[in-house]
Image 1 (spheres, rainbow, N blue to C red):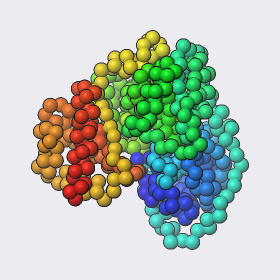
Image 2: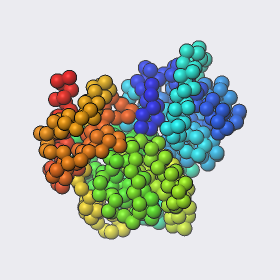
Image 3: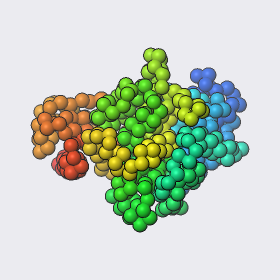
Image 4: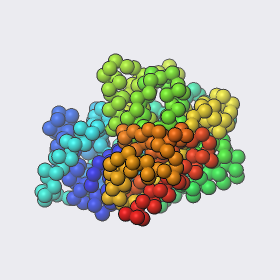
Length: 472
């Protein structure tokens, strides 16, 4: 078990039982020892629709109770809904979810009373867990009072105040429901703004949906649905509802960093914090300062907090996967949208659809107006961590190693190593190689002048990785 870009992740067989009790206990002790909670304080627990989530949640509830806290069961709700509700109560929370990864894996996301934990918190929790790793823990599952309806209602009220009344009237939107815990709330909030909403693809079997590297199978579904039903867009979210997916009227997914850019302009942000994997054209696309970070919501949160500490206001952040975070309160339609420093999928969906509706344009035309470089990303799944680590070590060892590896693509102009290796070729194209922080996956991000060039560069980049792994 280890912390990745957002939360603890591992195989279900590793997380069930001892590991989930261990980390829940360590989190409770950390909260109590750091003064972020007192004995008997409530702590809120929710989960996604993975088959393993209810059992892991019950184990965590039992462990938290024995550690001196008072768990509250919030059922199956989106991660941002859980975080919002717990923060409104001044309490900590934890979400049982593996986000977008397959159902044979799961994880836990941890939240302090003021929002998502940071890397220092992760280190403290890990240290406590390591110190108890050999202890014989009580693994008995626990039960807790249920407040799912209240948590869902608070999140619904937040989303109902973002746009003007009937802000999406005239749009026909498909909601790809699959197995995301956001599936019903997405339908409700869009219909509440006057959109004609069509639920699609609901599944009682867990489907891993990665909003940053959308599968060809999913894109084929979107294109068929938009053509058959004459939809203006299809929207969805990942398993725990903190990463959005929005397609245009052809079924083509919009980039998550474009959604974040749209929200930054929608909110009137002064500072936008985003990882190095987000599009390089963002700096020139809004009236705000851009701060670049490593990949992962904890790093985005760290960047947002640094901006606040420096006296900046109107601070928000987003990731290339579209997850949107706010560190400041913002005023919308005369009401206050309170800060929510964890990834949210609803705000980017709403802001993007509203922009297209305001402009009277298709989503493809709305996206094209930003004139961003064409970006694409994909990943090699089930790619051994040891292999990705060896590849990155080889590429970092000498400039000649990197140049030799990328020689089939072109000559290297420059390279940065903020998080993975992001290389600009002499012709201006960009290729970024980065192992996933929470799954056995090797990711590749590219930018080029045209869609054809970006697709070709992405394909070539993945082929180079495969070829290197086969030789090793």
